[in-house]
Image (cartoon, rainbow over all chains, first blue to last red; front, side):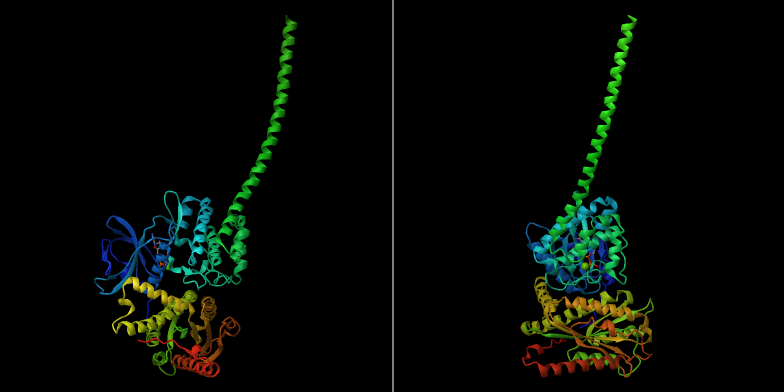
Amino acid sequence: MTVMTMYTSNNLCNIRTGTVIQGKWHKRHYEIIKPLGKGANGVVYLAKEGRAFVALKISNEATTMMSEVNVLKRFSEVQGITLGPCLLDVDDWLHPHEKKIYSFYVMEYIEGDDLLTFIQKRGKEWIIVIILQLLGDLHKLHEKGWVFGDLKPDNLIVSGAVPKVRLIDVGGTTIRGRAIKEFTEFFDRGYWGMGTRKAEPSYDLFAVAMIMMNMCYPKRFERKENGREQLRLMISSHPYLKKYEKILWRALDGKYTCAHEMRKDLLQCMQQPTEQKEKREGRTVRVKGKKKFRLLETMFLFVCLLFMYVVYLYVQIL
Amino acid sequence: MRKGTLRQILLITDGCSNQGEDPIAMAALAKEQGITVNVIGVLDQDIIDEQGLREIEGIAQSGGGISQVVYAKQLSQTVQMVTRKAMTQTLQGVINRELKQILGSHASIEHLSPEKRVEVMEVVEELGETVNLQVLILVDTSGSMKTKLQTVKEALLDLSISLNARLGNNEFSVFVFPGKKGEVDRILDWTPKMESISSVFPKLTSGGITPTGPAIREAVQQFQKRRSLKGLFTHDGDDDVYIEQSM
Ligand SMILES: Nc1ncnc2c1ncn2[C@@H]1O[C@H](COP(=O)(O)OP(=O)(O)OP(=O)(O)O)[C@@H](O)[C@H]1O
Ligand SMILES: [Mg+2]
């Protein structure tokens, strides 16, 4: 067995527009349009099968590809809900110049912006909307016995005229109870010294809290000596995060065992401050009303007096 | 399938050996005994030493393992990834061997249809999760590694977080070379918990010699000692199945 190269070969990164990739087994044709993104495990291209757009992921690492295909396949078996892109085809491609075989798989193309870009374009008020959507999806995923694992803004695409978050890149998706397959340091509780890398719902919920952090600190930051203390400062010094401080900490400390709990708390927290505001506003309105009433009273009296005076004068003159 | 044990050596170094046996030969020897040798080369900046690179790749190749060259900063993720991928590779080798037994000498995972391959991968993943693992870590502590030792320590702690999340058992042992007296020093004996290296990990480097070959030889001997000790104490042979990679 040979030494594995962990980075995708250059030839795979530069497949030219117009190249037709034909599968060795299923003989379906895909015309390459442009690269969509490149990761540690392969390259994803926008491609066309007939007139339909698809996303095609190709890699020189058959192993990780097959493991991703496995997850996507299981997701498609779950009926009625879409978790991640639909899997359309799995095949091998014989590279015409290299005479080497590469594995690829084809999935639904999800058009849209990644989460960070979307929030920058559409505004902060969308953060909570997306997080609530995400928690809903995660809950379903956890119930089916999976943990997403590599949860981060880059792996979330907001898509559609009515914006809806979609999970992509299932490379980290792991069966509950096993060891997380792939992760990104900033979003990994192991990195922050705040928990294990066991695939449990609380692992994903930690990442959700870190996604909210990342929305407020788009540059991210590195861990220092005491990770927890560092996160505490970052949360308490940011007005947006401060509002959700309690919930963020419950998520970071692994206190939520289920995505629905966190979702419920977020919903409640959102309603609270607005309620208080309304109450306060209600009161001021009433106070203002009283003042106005008094003013009207005085004016009315004044007008009455004036009227009587005019009548008096009129009578006098007559 | 039986529950077995995978044995790996993980060598972390930044350059060329300059004393003792040829490390590539020692790695080949390890492989003959069913032990995989993986190598991580740690770089400072862009300085890439051709000869060092060749040695790093050579050791992994002849040791049946994986090599990866990284900057110190990316070490944690790499150590984790290399160890996992090496496990998968070995297990795939085992599956390939079984496939050949069933389907004839030309069969291998690559020749299966994608559908079958996906199924095989599921088995490999399952095995990777449940198999027992023994990792012997060999750290180069020669002069040039001085600035990187803190990062190496952190990467090893990180590795134990990742591996301890698995269902299977782990055992770690850590050696550094050159040693204070001899060529190699053991700083951590076989243990399921690597956390204790924090206190014993050397802060200082020792000298200019880099006896990579002898270090690998010593590591292989440690595995053999471990094996014979286990044989003495365990009565059921079940525990003693070692998974070896075939070519
Ligand atoms: N189904 C899809 N629809 C649209 N874009 C996609 C799709 N799948 C992947 N992409 C794009 O391609 C990029 C890389 O894909 P992916 O994350 O799967 O690769 P990777 O090698 O696993 O990368 P990573 O380093 O994040 O693990 C994504 O960040 C995304 O922008
Ligand atoms: Mg990925």
